[in-house]
Length: 273
Image (cartoon, rainbow, N blue to C red; front, side, top):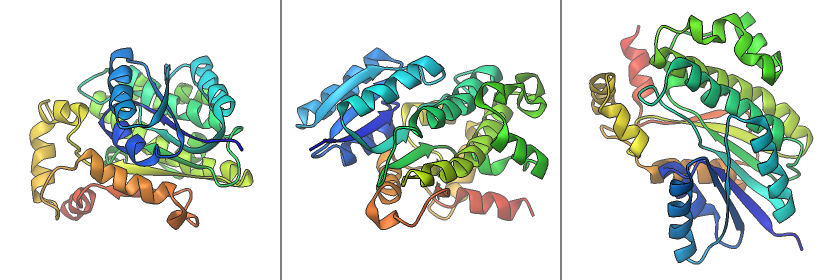
């Protein structure tokens, strides 16, 4: 009998927390561009008795992501596929953010849709940044849905030159990601599979800590402090939500986004009125 395979792209705090929840009794294929981070995460899971296979992957390179999809089916049946890889405004310029956070997700959808099957569940970790910026027009939404992946960043409103700074690029990339994944649920559904997104707020991972220490940190901290939950999130908060969306209790849920943000987006919209 073919063994179920869990794929985690991105071995950081959220990826590790989600992988740990899903790995029992399955083969865990853990992938990251950073070999040091990849080994560290794998060592933690191996020490806990999980079966772990590692692969280095460039999440923004078509051939690299396609090779990872091929490895997945060689190992067994893709049961859970989770994409957490990305860069944040303090880590990269607008061009890199759009290339990794949007183009990379589109590559993921292209590569894994052909290999999923009945019962497979996919998840892309997006961000509340996709909910906080100006909304795209209906025409822009249609273009995000219908433009081939390799032409996506050639759209005028998605070009790096159209971004005033990295924060704007991040917000646009995440909003487009939500749209692209929602549309992909149709193709995944034809294969008997589901796919959703999670939009975390401020989560205390190394990336989240760097954002809080950056130029936008004070505003992020203020919004987090005033939100209903009154605290930052943890990787386990995200993993709890991921486990629901990837599990049988969410078998009627696909093409949607789940905010895991302590109510910060709700607060932001109330203040914006």
